[in-house]
Length: 227
Length: 408
Image (cartoon, rainbow over all chains, first blue to last red; front, side, top):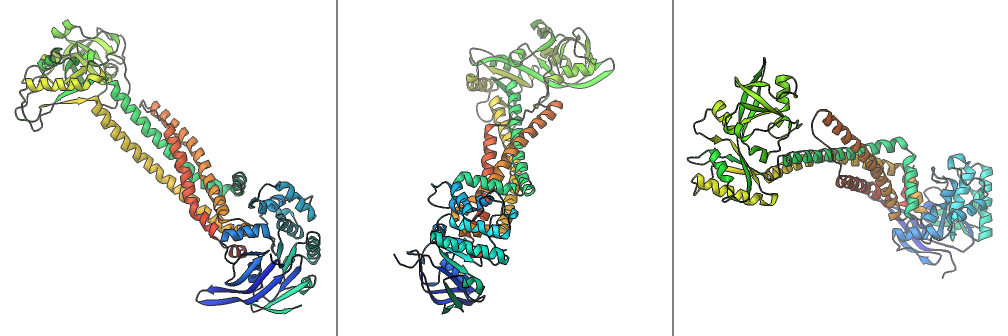
């Protein structure tokens, strides 16, 4: 078992855009230890979203080795990747991505519905997760009855329920006002402290990056510098 | 993901856009309703026709002349009928009734009409169910004595006298000659085959031969009804009749100058015809079910496109291909199965209505909804939902999570 929770070596990613090959990642090595809070920064087109997709197991690298929590995922099938995402990765998106028709509770339950081990009391776990993000009194509200900050809290609760090794947050404060953004950031930091969950935040906001232990800067598909 | 929660989720998704769901279902409802109603009408028609044929009499054979390709044909005669009825040569034959038929003008006090007359012997009551609402069937002395007696069908009586009761003893003119009414046939109701007894007038065969028919050969008859002793002996009786008639008509080689039809032949014919009829109706209705299925596919494709982002999210949090596939298949199957159930009810109401209309028009048709047709419609609509759901659902299942998440 590697001491790194994220262990990506010489990752390249090439997209075929019609006749043109786009090299999104050009041999990039990233190692993240358990419990770290890391931010990935870079201008648009730098390849940071591609890197996030690969770390989050939404996509496979064209070449290179990637292990998440000691499991090599480079050659997994789509369904195996789905299983890894289900139990190993929690996602927090800029636009929340909640199911509009479902209540907060049902949204938080969703990852448990697809879990292989399904013995747990889903309602109870989901309720506890919502209480942990401070929404214990909103569990039966639907997304359109919640504020932006509250919706992002629901999304964080959803990311937590399967006790993932890492939480990937893609511009988590991008659609929020600064006050809600600060609240979300401190919530994420608290979760990291209390649960030891590794936190990877993709952002282009230096203020957010400043709140993390380490910044990985990406430029043209390569690591630009380390801070 | 367990089935129960998938089902609830699918129901929620369908109820979130009620108008669209209802309109999509309407296609299936109409399709299934049409299939059910059409099959019911087809089955009802078959039952009505079979009932009609069986009503003629179960053990009956019809012997007619058949002069096709026969040199020197001989007509059927009363003597042929007598020979057929001979228990020594034809032990399987219970009775043989010669009949002559034709059109004749009937008049009574200024009312005139054309009707079918049937010249009968006493044996006629052995081979046909004769029920009289009043009077009595011809006695042997009336038949042998060339009596000018007549038994009227109810419609004939109504047309001539304006009533069908209290007519025994009245006089009716048959081709200008006075006949005494000795009986009235009970009303039989609608009939699909030939002329109904309601529209006939029965007179003694001998009287018909001497007074109404001018034929070259004496004793010639049009038809001999033969009844077998029981249903199992019909085949035997047919063979015996054939042998007797071949012998009497001196047919040693070649085609017979007569033909024998059994009820079986009519039943076969009728069920072939109604079978084709039912398949035709069902096929036409099936097309509308197909169109309904295409409607489902269409709306499911729209739904997949609309929910691309949702699919992406589900995949991101761990949904596998089969989870997404199942979700959309359950939705399309629900649409078609619920639509199918409503369609069955609609089809049932429709065929009830058609039955009522038929009854009101004095046409015997009881649309029969069979378990078979209900099962067929249910299975077929579920299959339609699955079949037309597979393409949209697999489109959804094949979506790449990143692409799907990125879509707006």
